[in-house]
Image 1 (cartoon, rainbow, N blue to C red):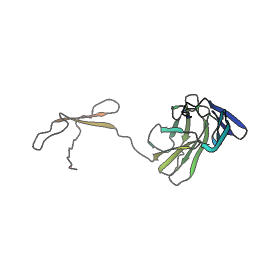
Image 2: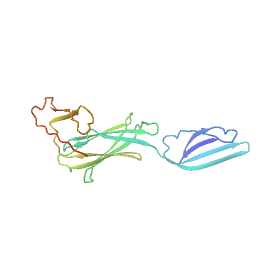
Image 3: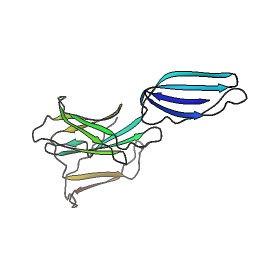
Image 4: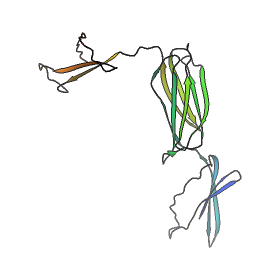
Length: 209
């Protein structure tokens, strides 16, 4: 028994073996790379009584997993969106190296504001930076990364915001309390540069779901 794969003028031998006493053969073979698209799978059987060949048209489709990340979820005008992609090949999840990957960004109005073709490195990684203008459309920006037939999407927000000046933490002695019990806890407030928020007004409210 011989198993071959043909695409246009390219031909690959996949397997050669013998059937058992029942005339059956269980086999595993690895699909060659660079044979994507419509191909012909041919099985040729030779015996003492003659030969027979069976061919069938099949489609080979590469399977990739693309991970798309940004350095943060919210941006302001004039800031840089740092984009990173990691591409892995199924099923072994090995890095997809030296493959073209397209990064695109649409603003909140659907305008395409960024487009760049990149090449994955030896670890399957590609980077891109997008500088937001001083005056932009505020709202949700959609970032897409496309590799072959695989598409990854991520949404980030572009808006003006003010960072909090200090951080508040609240911890209780127990994770839950019964009706009628007294809850005891600790509230701490510290500025981000390290000093405590001294003599601040504290308001505690309880809500029932």
